[in-house]
Length: 143
Image 1 (cartoon, rainbow, N blue to C red):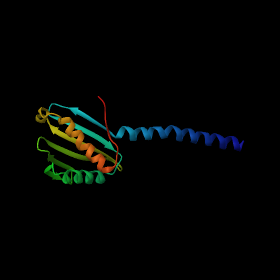
Image 2 (image 1 turned 60 degrees about the vertical axis):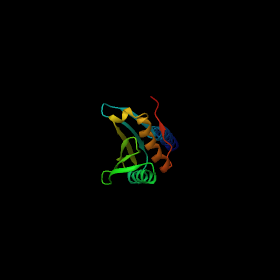
Image 3 (image 1 turned 60 degrees about the horizontal axis):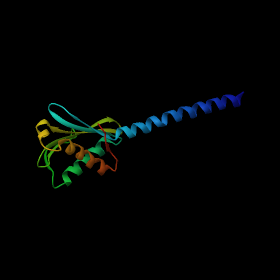
Image 4 (image 1 turned 135 degrees about the vertical axis):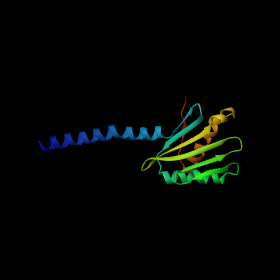
């Protein structure tokens, strides 16, 4: 009788673990897809990463300030926000904390920049630069 109870508990635990593992790995896969949208006032791209917010924001600062092609216009470390220009367009990049080890990067380009060819590509490129700096593989969500 004891061995039957032990076997039942063991099988239940194995079943529980097996059903939970795909869900957590699926979250990681989904969390690294860059999504873009156009609104009446902006072009916005964002991605959710499984990384500490401060580490992500430091990678943003390092990426933007190390590029000679980018000029910092405004920086607010308390809000983890930086506004910068690449000569053609102005982008605002913000890092938000969703959980202890989960962050969201949002990059916005004003609607007037829709006239600039590739405004969406510029927002996605900004995110890809940060992902590369962090060593995280990000992909662009297909529409």
